[in-house]
Image 1 (tube, rainbow, N blue to C red):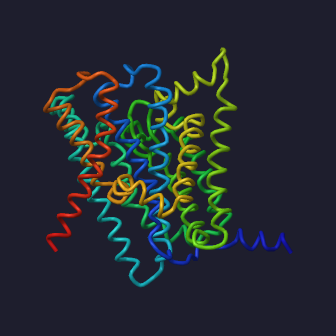
Image 2: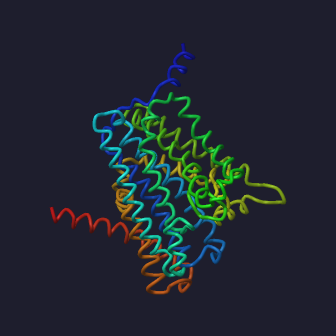
Image 3: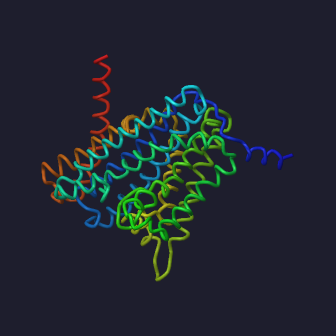
Length: 377
């Protein structure tokens, strides 16, 4: 009987209940991801990772490596919670269009912020190359990933809902392996920008659509599980599974860290802090980054609405991620780096303080603009 139940469950398609309310913990998790990103961008944009003291790399800068995986994971969760239950309904074409229009909005800001990031560092012709996808920026490139993803993922969500559970579980692994193979062996007709956009390239700091898609699909799976169990009796078991999976990944990282030629765990941590294995993604970096992201997600979901209230600045940031991204990039690169010419002007503790203050300033900006918007109504 138990075997039949398992087979029946593995054959289930994603027919999901609607959310019983807004899960503020998702905003909190997204806000933590953006706060870590702001801290990382402030340090690397105003001081430089190569100049960091050891204590700045490990543990401080090391913790920011959870950010990218958490950000993309929550992107998938939000898609699942807000849109998967609506797939196939009469208004689905309108919802799909709304997602694609959001993608065009993100694409617009990606191009604007590309100019903001590069104007203090590069001549106009190289900025134009970046706008035309001949080269890529660094700090704003993740917006390029989201913009393109939002243009094609809405068409894939109905197909995802029709797949049986066993294939939805296997698909992230299969795509990760395929993307890795393509990155190593496919030439993409010699078009480096195309390769960088799809599966990443060692010469370009990009987030590949296929190489990062497994994180989005994992987010869809987590979102499905939240819709089925977050408000019910299985909540504790679900959150334990999410946190336990993250802890196991971190343990696997530490188990594999001592490598050849006398490498130590500290060496492995320093390598991750210096972004070794981030682009294109490698196993050690992803074990650490995704493992930490899952642990943070589990803690946020466990804290629930109470944690979201106590950490209100982070929740505000997570509730309006695009505005938070625009604000901190403009301040770091438009104000500090371009107007104030503040590249390596301040020592590391001061830059770290600027990053922490910028997190609070970003939350304040979002709160202020939200208040003004309410006043105009």
